[in-house]
Length: 442
Image 1: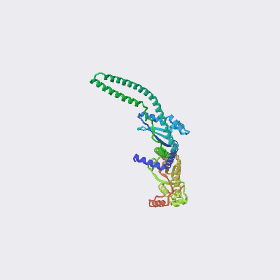
Image 2: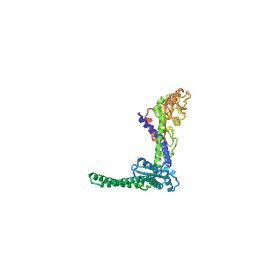
Image 3: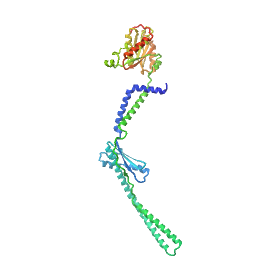
Image 4: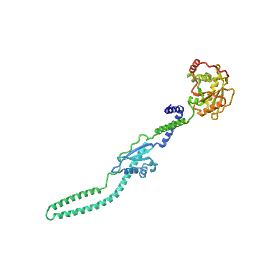
């Protein structure tokens, strides 16, 4: 059998045996996720967009985002809203990012859609106001210095223009020659260039405009809560708890060395498994329910064909009784031994004498009895490790009661139906008869 098949088999066993625990773990995870949503869920979010005009570098974009969430802007927004929160309280509720196109997005988070919209619009408005104040203050100081420099440059241009006029008047005196014509042309060209430079200086002297940020529009009211919502967190918690619980059960199953298969149990004991004995659940159903399902009104082991078949296989070849051995901590095996003993005592045609002994699997010791022959171990699956079974087998051999076989007890949901009893009886009639063992039941 490949490792993949073994893993799939183990997963199937975990799902069959632990499905109720996994369901409870999943529900607990969903409840934990729902409870966490009260703290983790952001609530309602609204976004307002502000256009950053003018040429700005990437570092300036980051500075604008930090400016939108600065303490000054948040304090002004908190005061304008009139809420009980301060600017420091709003710091975790406001976020600002800048896209590549120079678009500043301000996101506000609140408990209700209207509060989220009001918070976002107010922060955007306060940011634009504060940014304009900074631009105006910075422009006033820089403009004063620039105007002083432009005035000094204008005076130098006027002086140069006066010198050009003086040279032009001097060139008009005397005879008109080719050199004087060329000089006049160059002076006129220089005068024209100076005039254009003066016009550019006048334009530069004007204060720059169109650099203020502009709010594109009011924030839209959110129609639903932002992710992660309570549904998302509940589903995530259920999935996480289910995976953790499943992995935990798988690790426990891999670490569990108790034997489950009949072949493994027989190999550890050194004797084959003589049969499997279903043990009905101790919980009883109402008589009307059992009749409607075709079940017998009473659970008599003597009427169970499976118990009869197991006794048929366990019939001893000598006159000494069989010793049924069950572990102290295996209640299902105890009930199986009781059913076998009751069925053996009620069997008038095939009298099989049984003795019962309990053994401690941690310290397996059996009392020596001369009137008892071979031993038969009754156990349930997934209760004993291989070394424990080896110890029980050696203890039986040391007491002079070597194991002649074993019986595997398994839990049955309900007693065997009448139809199953009829089928089993027909199988017993067609089977080869076996010599009865004379003894007395106990």
